[in-house]
Image (cartoon, rainbow, N blue to C red; front, side, top):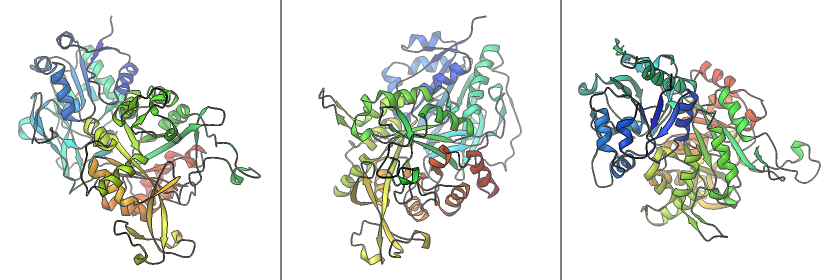
Length: 560
């Protein structure tokens, strides 16, 4: 019997590579849809919508796909799986519309309108692992356990209303708001979560859908009684970072800094001076290990990319491509996300083109470092006017705020008293006794740095975070040079100052050395995720031990 061939509607935005890998992992071949006539000829269509609703609908219109899709979906008998934006486009309209317009028309297959989460009530975007409350029993969830969390990353949602209740396959809660997390009517299925980023549970969802299409059971669904008191919960994320750079022999290795110094010193047994770059392993194999051990996300941080352009950095792109073949949780990549001109050819690449290369190679989110500080400085200097041309703005406009992470590298500037800070834009914080300065100072402001901590700028971390959010960033990766490599815990004062100032998620970074440090930062601050590197690389602490400690102390975590 000939295996079912999947028609993939790749409209050219974001990381579709992982969806391809999920389909092939389930044992199916892929045929790309490249012209409207192929839609009617398809046996099953998967639409992995990545990016913004407005970009997706604009591309569908430009390619002439809208009417063929409406025809394909009209009577709900032809198999279809829409993912994230691929689900949202099924609705009548969305608030994620072009500038100057209140809403944008969708395919109109599912009744209802897509709305934006209220950032006055919750952190937006909704990023991370959450559960599902099933409204119908369906073969697409045949291999997925009810208590398995799946991965969401979105700022807009489709509410459950009377007109679409017969479509709702599952619902999810976030910040007091319930929303549709999957739909099905006939053979038309769609999900707000990303199965290709939901680990084995997500792979099993794809497998269940395609098997049901192939064996003719896709229509075998039935309503089930819904417990109106049921609630799902967004869990706290454990992120593993891999600092990647070339060693002195030209090999790409994972290393780890001590206050951003990645070369071996007396702590590593070097008698005098500085040794070679610390080599803690190969990027792809280490990442695969962390995926298997239960990491919720993996971040590749290319720490020497400021010296060259990412478009020329083929080894890093190859790392992403190889990792995405076997890693099905979100992957962030940072380093070199900026506009630059090739000194040899004179060709200029803008930040959006650079980010697109990373996305197509397998990244789900990109992390912007030095360029975000420069953008914030210019934003403040201009009287908080947007140009629409910064790397943050251009990338988030096409791919959505959820795809843009800002990595901030601050260091403390100690003060004897708050009044010693003369710049009103610098936010001064109180320090715990354990964080007091060399002369017992109990106050500081956090000065941002660029170029891997080598150059300090006269702007504070809170100001950069607020400016980056205003420009369109969707998440903050908050480091601290003073705590880096010290294994004494996260900088709670910094984490709380920034997370209180923004309404986008914050990832705590720098300083983790044991399980308690994760529990503490989640208990004492508002961060949604926490990141570590060295303690995992050196196998001093297991990811499972961190999650057990969190759960023991009442902090929700993902099991796998």
